[in-house]
Length: 198
Image (tube, rainbow, N blue to C red; front, side, top):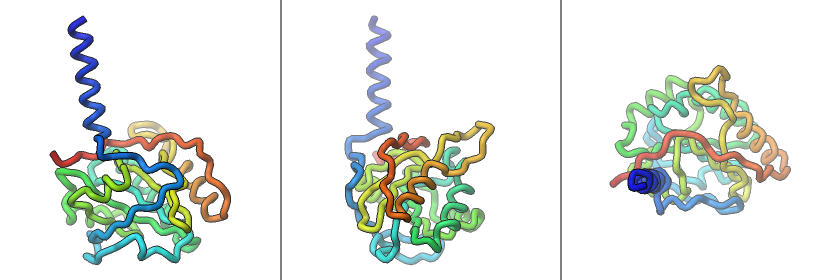
């Protein structure tokens, strides 16, 4: 009985580490928190309002080494290319501690042909504001910057036989860009937990 009690306590402590108290998840309909972060490729400061003319904004938290990000990175790059002329803005943010170095993130962005900014959230304040808990963790906002989708990119996983397509996220983007409601039946994002500063 003592072993079971200790195990339950251990699991509870792990859960608190993976989903810290400051990571209050944004509810659907919530506004997009602002950010002003450096783009690791251009060195420019990028903010939420730089994309105010876009029909939709996708903010996705990533890191370089995560196997889930490695699994979906090509699908994410293709998604951004497919919708960039249709009114979707994409912004990737890295918040891990110890962080992926900006130079390493820049290398990944260039290797994968990312056409969107990759921002460095050194203080983790933006990740906290969004309630991000894993990588990849996508937040899709419509034109008024209210949250319409926060879920998995698709049902594929690293090590599986299927190639990532970002099917679930694409469906939400298609609905948003066409002015249709996005289904609220959204499966949670799957990925590696964000590593928080102690």
